[in-house]
Image (tube, rainbow, N blue to C red; front, side, top):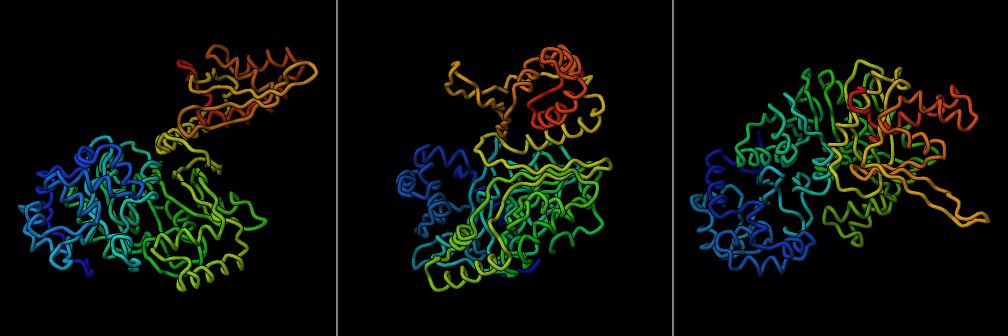
Length: 499
């Protein structure tokens, strides 16, 4: 691997790891020194409480100020904190940089944790720390997009996993909890060099391969693939490698969706972030489903739709460019002109879950814009299970005994009328996972009330038809699509012993 960044060698990383461990520079150690309030303030971009809390924290405080607060520190204190890593080696490797007689961080190295423990992630300093816009080959730290993909990825054990476009390596870190073998690729030599530092610092064995898209792993297949691609949409250009693909519009997301299933083993699963254009007169679901190859289960979850002007301003600020500056105004003008010429009404963003299958595939596109706390990855794995169950048992749905889980509740909204309160909305809520909601009519409400794990669906429909003077066959035809959707969303489950 080549690049303008010196290699962070095994020996260098071993010594740095020892200094971090001695100081307690990990996720728990940082929170322990700062306290919950100062740590939360730091997350909001308010550094003063954290700065004050770090002043009496010895070598750990030095690391916090260097790498989390971006302050300049005396060389003697930095040398003491780094031991047994020589200060001169840290400067030569680019970990630190001189600022007069003081020292500052040259790289962003910070703790990152999950429920099982803490890692360190190596990345470039952001524009605020640098005091200037980032360079084209900038390698991002762990941002909101990275974290959202972490939470949207299923964590069932797999043999092989591909982290496509690894960046700083954070997806591979999380993958190490459930994957036996990990391959990480990136088109950027600098990204691979920093990811290599991340993996060595955390004593992880990850295969690193340089190249664009799926070229480095041609003719290989993986049990799972995760990808945080350069999904920013707009003109075909590359201002920053981490976000711009050089492809116009949403072609980068389309490319990954189109090609990823071909690199999965049978039944293998892929998770990615993606963006798609909302074109005037076109349904976004029709657009993204055209990307899919044959033999692919697909779940597109749209989390947000951004106005073009807001979208452009957000990404300009992300790169440290003031939208009011001459450069910002010129870039915004070109970008918005492209959107206008393409008839773009908005930019959708969300998660895509794909599975290679030799059966008739299930393809679902849906909005999920409400706030929720539970990780989507757990739901994605369960969604795939429920889709597979429906595929195998669809012909026997009427014979199945269903149960409404305890996590599902019914909300009624009523308005006053001449005969008292009249129910106008019946809304089913799932209180866990992503919080699915479904509005029901009176018959559907009555049907679900009977799903208590006793009678099969056919028996409930016959009782309901008799009570309302309806044809049971016609009622079943109308009910089955609703039942399928509720099963997919985990709002109807198969009763124990009825599977």
